[in-house]
Length: 294
Image (cartoon, rainbow, N blue to C red; front, side):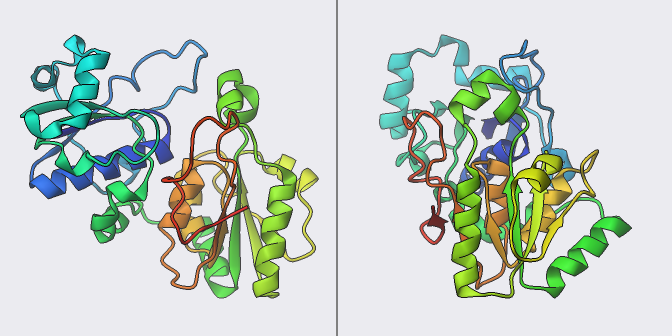
């Protein structure tokens, strides 16, 4: 069995699930989720999250405490973790703790009994089962009338989604220092770049702070502020963004997934070059080669 530890919000959980699903598919074994970290009280250190993958029509199996004993997680140390990452073929049962954020080249040598602990933020982990991931990451429930109206509007024009992530990136000290916020100049440059290719684009702005966007982001083309999912069903913003012809994303796994799930063959995806505020971590394996970084 493959077990994946869930950490963070929807976008992070999607990365973790996709990596685990890929490894489980390769070994033709079951995938289980460990949600114990989500159940903890963060005491202000990070944003409290719940199991958010339940919005998709996928079979979610939770690992039991007895099943977790197979991986000897409590006995793990730096030496054993390094040894397992470098020589996974030596182990029948493996606790794979991600080291750094670059693609782990030994990933597909992990055994059929593996516990994945990390973020696994690269399409390289699951690109081989792209069609499966796209199919599974569709909303379980049908759209309501308001979202259907937005979807039809998005489909009817040369639509570009613009995602602005604020929330805990602004209000929470740890998140602000780690992620930071992309600049207004980034969004202006991204739209200018897209307009040079096609002047008839129309913008659809998605954000957890639309008021800030309306007051601070000014574009000289048709712009719509999608406010239908502000109080609930926020995940449907991801779905709507994925139907836009092109995407301008924030340094956010939420809009990363909207762009990745976009099935328009002629899409242009623009992502911020500076994904992390501290410049210590690399986004080399996070951003697909076909995307534009500004």
